[in-house]
Image (cartoon, rainbow, N blue to C red):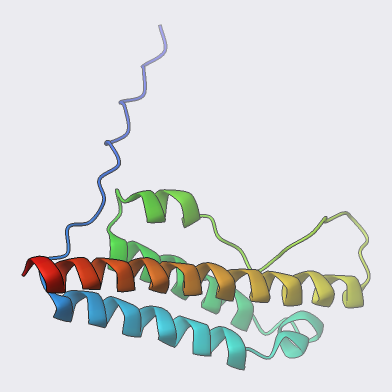
Length: 129
């Protein structure tokens, strides 16, 4: 009989204890946005530099660090990728570049939304603290 996988841990929103914790999380997410904005997608695609893979990994890790591994935010974005649109075999380099550019805009939008969520939490901590 095959072994049953253990149930995944329940999702638990991170409980931020101080405004400083939240401000540090916002700063980390803002660094990832700057990293995305500065990413040379043309070189990443045409010269296979791997820089896009590093930025993607940094984004995922930052979301995990800021919100925690069992958070709804990390659960939703743990597989985030710098790609938007359809993908198929034999795509031209320009089509790949276009998909990565759309993906970059999408990831920046997601990170901006997460910053907004942290700003809301900061207001709550400031008022209740």
